[in-house]
Image 1 (tube, rainbow, N blue to C red):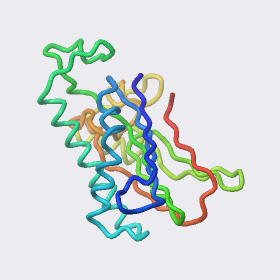
Image 2 (image 1 turned 45 degrees about the vertical axis):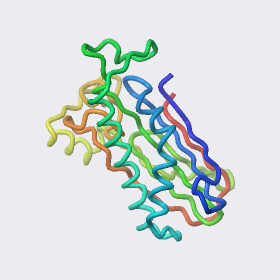
Image 3 (image 1 turned 120 degrees about the vertical axis):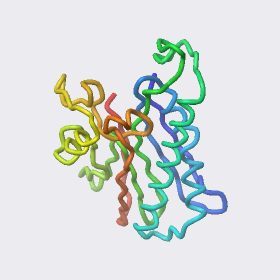
Length: 207
């Protein structure tokens, strides 16, 4: 199983009524998704403590961008410096054993009584239900988006249409934590702030 979820009520020490939710869809193996499940809320809480996040979108944007970047750096460092030999992991087929081309999508929501902050990289989604009407809170990063396609090509990557648009004919998303940065699959999370009343929130991946 390569998908993980994280639910952390009151996740920032010293504050209340700020709750963390995350969905992470791993690719290649579950290692990066599991890392995000175990660490993302702690990193967001740490960046939150360093910033003034009184509901301003610019402050939250910086918090989420730094948090995603830290997880991306952690995943890259972990992948290149250590070997893994777990029977459930596809990366065991590599010689030497290591996870050098794996990663995970990420969609994260911080929910408080006054706002919902959503950040995503990849094609896992957050949706708000307001009076039964779905309100998208995230935008998919897909290889066939004109802006993403141009960026991937500029990085030396290719988009091959095999059961849909895929980077190198494999990855159905164009941004992720970890992954093949040298081929245009990069981080660059999209961050949004919803200030109106919360009704119901749904986060989902493609499986």
